[in-house]
Length: 385
Length: 227
Ligand SMILES: Nc1ncnc2c1ncn2[C@@H]1O[C@H](COP(=O)(O)OP(=O)(O)OP(=O)(O)O)[C@@H](O)[C@H]1O
Ligand SMILES: [Mg+2]
Image 1 (cartoon, rainbow over the protein chains, first blue to last red):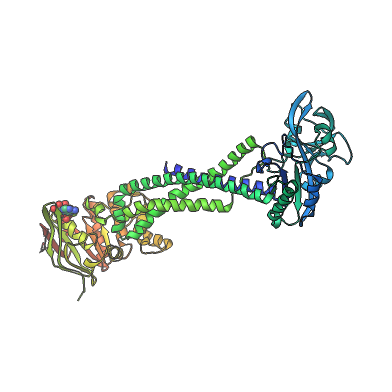
Image 2 (image 1 turned 90 degrees about the vertical axis):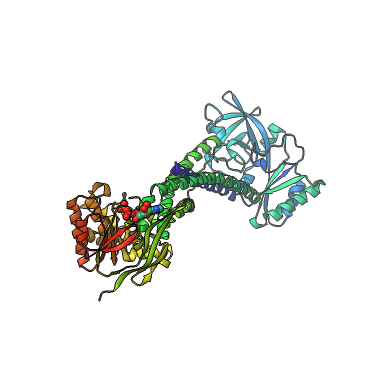
């Protein structure tokens, strides 16, 4: 019972730290490759553009102009500016239809935004320059959306037009970047043909020095807002600020979860205290004997505190083991339900923390029983012969 | 001339139970020489254990002084008393008082751990002591696996472990048969012949007579007796 409390507490700590750390690594790992990126979008969209269905601006008529782009390019520290076209679309294959996010982007911009290494292709190639009616589809679009997997060379129907699939992206996971798994990439020309949209409401800007990201983002906003005479026209979001806010959310979650763990530990320590008190009572005679043969109060105190620590360390080790197993299990569940890859990171520091917590809990909760034991008189034990 | 190892000056213990006071030990002044072999006899409830517990620093006197090897222990605090107990006194109880969860050798080694002797030395010495009380074959037995006489011999080995200058035995043969009692007495007398001071409480006059000084307690009063 007492061991169980300690077990649960330590297990919670280990599992939470493991998963939290894993999440952080997954997210920062993904985002840091994009950390020199600033996303500019018009209208009052915010960071949630990265969540939900990608960049959708169906009922937004505010577009970036050529002049905006040119002005942005003049700002110091800008590497390049690429506009990206986004629109929801309908894909039909093998008689079934599904809604997807269409992205109009050419090879040059594709390179500039993502770099070739980031989004790997599972098969095929990116759309060749000038080739029409071809598309590259996301992993989920290829493998999840339809009963039959879409293969390279298959023809799909997008918004009523036929396209040949020339490439399929690798699984990207549920990262915070654009949700490529569920996207279809086509050329800007094709994009205009099927959606009628040629102007972009978003641009992806890359900069040279990440440390100036926030300054540059401010400057971009000012320039674009001035062009349109509207203080709230555009929004420039840096990836670093996004990473920070996500990390903040994760640490808040960790704090909340750790407090749950602490409650378990408080319950456990009350349990240990209780067990120890009972054991002190039962061992009155034994304690008396030890004192009669020369144990000082300190010796007795030490013996009982060590015993408390031992109990909780045993619980702690079981908890650590369960925590490792638990965090694996939990992350599999999370992966199943949210997609993406989440490998829990069980660091030595979290194991050490687990042990330290066990030792401290054991020590604190055995302090009172141990003091009680130490105060016992040696004759108590030997008197009633 | 041998020096006085224990001196009591008006040593006295009174229990207060509500309105009645029980003078368990009336003011007693005696001195005991190093190497003495003393027996204490007296009826039940006469104050023998009270006297022994005071001499063994398990209990504190109501008034009076107790001087052990020149130190007035009646003025010491709990911690200092514990140190006197483990360095100077070996206590043997009627009911053995071994730790039930520890085997014979660990019971003997336990008291040595309080004085900071390392484990290896402790176990080596505990084994020697168990050999001395003829229990070499029982070192890993738990108290529950030993006869009363054997348990008492483990207790003697334990009492000797820290090389005390005084052995106090409160009815050491009270719970064992005559044969075992004889063996225990022989061991104690062996120890005494090597210079150890021994004080033994007993109901058995034959045993009491073996000592070289006899005390008698009656209603908390200690007097010399001659058999
Ligand atoms: N803690 C105590 N509180 C009150 N009275 C006590 C206490 N301990 C002992 N006494 C009383 O002191 C007197 C002496 O007790 P003590 O145990 O010394 O006797 P004893 O000679 O050892 O007897 P026995 O031969 O039965 O062991 C008894 O009357 C006893 O009732
Ligand atoms: Mg008695």
